[in-house]
Picture: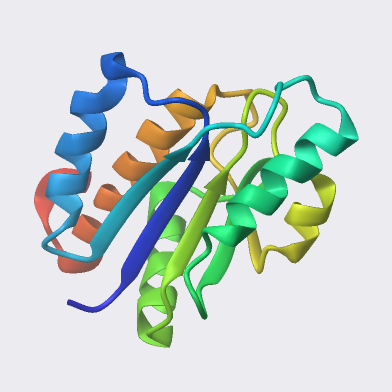
Length: 154
């Protein structure tokens, strides 16, 4: 199948968005294997360094062996859809799985950001983890359709 993608998100599953997540995963599957794992924060989400560190440890435990780690963060690389598709195409050639990490209400721990191979920004605006998950999945699908020459991306 080629590229394996794991998307890890801190926060409980929200049924309001579940249909969108499932539909986007269905659309991505012809291009890559994809798994979305929503993880409950270990303790309170209060933004304290120790809380963020606990979330980071939980995310890292779920990174697949040998995966290229990608953190989603406002200070990450900003790309339009074509540039993201090109980046995705380069990752596909590496034949390593990708592990995207989406933080909880207070974002990602600074040490986790440094541990990630890449930091990607979906928007300069602050997005909830639920919206970030949908935007990421949509951009993954859009990126794959760009690479395949499919008209969806236009």
